Every structure is written in structure tokens, then in C-alpha cells.
Image (tube, rainbow, N blue to C red; front, side, top):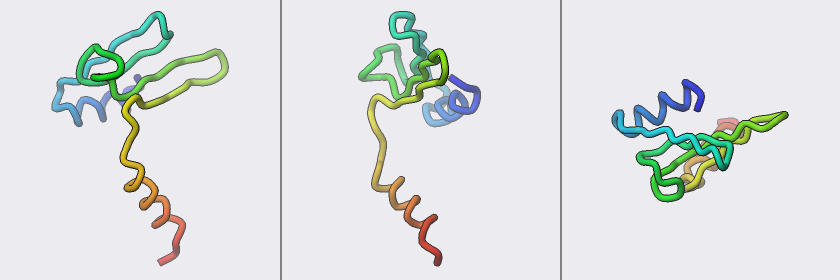
Amino acid sequence: MSNGARGIFEELSNGTAVETVRLGDNAATDGVGPKKMTEGYAYIMPLRGYVNLGCYQGGLLDAALAARKRRRDPA
């Protein structure tokens, strides 16, 4: 993962973040353990023309959508 993303994972996991390289997937996963779907939170997959970033668990979309709406609405 990038240094910025790695720093966020380290902070959120109290220093217990684990980065696992997945050669079969051509990706790297960050999470709290080596298990991809149950302990992994996000992945980075470099491809030929771009980099794919994703999350295994999803996120709190209500909070993210509310933040976007506040930015668009002039107050």
C-alpha cells in the first residue's frame, strides 16, 4: 500500500496492521491479519495502465454521503 494508506491502517489498528502480498491476485491486502475476506480491509492491485483500490468490508456510506451533501449545499 502507499505510505499514506499504510499510516492510516497503522493508526486505526493500534500498530497491529498486517500487509499481505497476494501473488495469485497480483495485489496487496492491508488488515488485521492474513485472511483476505475476514481480516483484510483494503487492497491495492497495480495493473498495466492504472491502480485498482478497493475495500473488502465496505464502509459507512451514510456518513460519507452526508459529508458529500454538506460540501455541495451552501450554508
